[in-house]
Amino acid sequence: MSGRGADNTNTSDVRSDRIVTNSNGQPINEPFATQRVGQHGPLLLQDFNLLDSLAHFNRERVPERNPHAHGSGAFGYFEVTDDITDVCGSAMFDTIGKRTRCLTRFSTVGGEKGSADSARDPRGFATKFYTEEGNLDWVYNNTPVFFIRDPSKFPHFIHTQKRNPQTNLKDANAAWDFWTTPENQVAIHQVMILFSDRGTPATYRNMNGYSGHTYKWSNKNGDWYYVQVHLITDQGIKNLTNEEATKMGGENPDHAQQDLFENIQSGNAPSWTVHIQTMTEEQAQKLSFSVFDLTKVWPHKDFPLRRVGKLVLNENPENYFAQIEQAAFAPSNTVPYQEASADPVLQARLFSYADAHRYRIGPNYHQVPVNCPYASKFFNPAIRDGPMTVNGNLGSEPNYLATSKPYQYIQKDKPIQQHQEVWNGPAVPFHWATSPGDGDFVQARELYKVLGRTPGEQQKLAHNIAVHVCSATKEIRERTYALFARVDEGLAEAIRSESEQCANNVAKSKF
Ligand code: NDP
Image 1 (cartoon, rainbow, N blue to C red):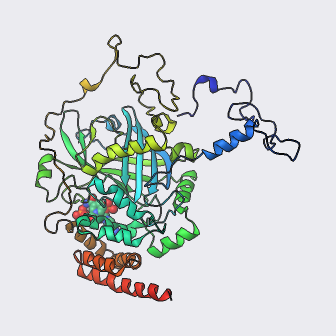
Image 2: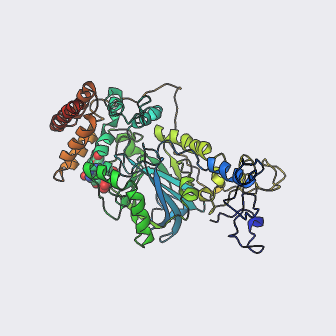
Image 3: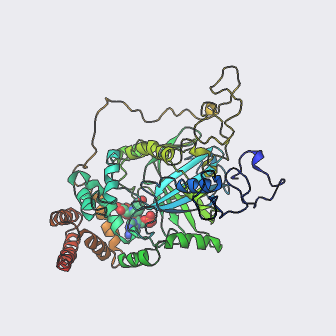
């Protein structure tokens, strides 16, 4: 991928490409001289070099992402280690040993671009694969579940993680008010992961990635499966305690960026072993929860992990802004044989991610070199024009699919999947609030038992919640204890005891 545009930008045979110029290419002899009336009189409007520099400086930021503003990334490759062509016909999986170039961006979610790497937050784990069938984006997180399953709640939930509209401070009341609202109880599973020490990973290298969503993959015979993807870190899981994370946030807020860059620079390329879980439609019908429910995992014992390949990040970006800040990941970027399922949060993301990039970078964001599907060849006569068209714009091609021109289509080689789900029903408003019975707490209780396998983990969960919720109001604290009592009475008591003590100390310190 070259950042070069058309051939006429290559002037190296005419003059050195290190001669300093203005944006027009005109050499600048005195970069710090400004045109004035006399030596100490006012400046002149005709000084284009000064105006050029100041005007461009004012425009050198693109809007930061709303969630996932703060991030780090690196290039690398995906290598197939195991044959899964019975599950997926995508070209990237067609041969053992095949490598596909990729870019991964890690991020926190709620904080601004300059916030600390060590914040308690889920981590984004987004990978763009430059395949010969187009770019494929796996826009994943380091947790296997999420806080919501109604996409309409996304802006509301993210706002609770942002700043209070009046105080401009992070707001424990907003976070716990949202999580303890009965119709949001599906969040409990993810809240427990967030407040376990996995909520503060030691580095980006020491955490897993999960699709979280259910996808639909198919093979070349037309058989299809529900699929979840797991990227398991080869560096091992390593987390910070709440206190270590707080200290790190002050001492080195960019510690994860530094760790990633320096490890790759010194040849210690991090890697992840990629696995899938698969489920048939018949198995999905027998589940005790919906296969489209983003707040639930697929138990390993029923849906064992199957190894697919390895993701290796071995190449730092040359330029952070060009290659990481402008990188545009979207779950709608997919390839043949990998489809979205009907998971409603995934369906909404199919729209909102690409839309965010149109706003942030512009409608031709896919022409930015890091986003170009360079390994396949873009050709669509009707996708033309718009701001910053820099790819030649398909030259003299008609700007519609012209009957008089021969075009090639490859859909006919793809299977017609006759046995897909069939959707049928009236258009109805539906709020997917609580699950029947205690359905939203079953996996949260399982997780509490998993934490119990390692001495101290349950206690750390209680501590991490207590020191966060203690700055919320008494009413919201009580709602929080009641919520966790539905997971485990002992957990709720441990949170209450430390949180009330902490709240008293905070109250005393105010006088
Ligand atoms: P298992 O006993 O087979 O799996 C438990 C899994 O929990 C481990 O494999 C590990 O997943 C994960 N885990 C370990 N420690 C933590 C932690 N501190 N925070 C979060 N996850 C941790 O049981 P099940 O598959 O039946 O799952 C039981 C519970 O484990 C679930 O309710 C869920 O909360 C959690 N879990 C399950 C996952 C799944 O896909 N089944 C994935 C992650 C968590 P890993 O190897 O991915 O690190």
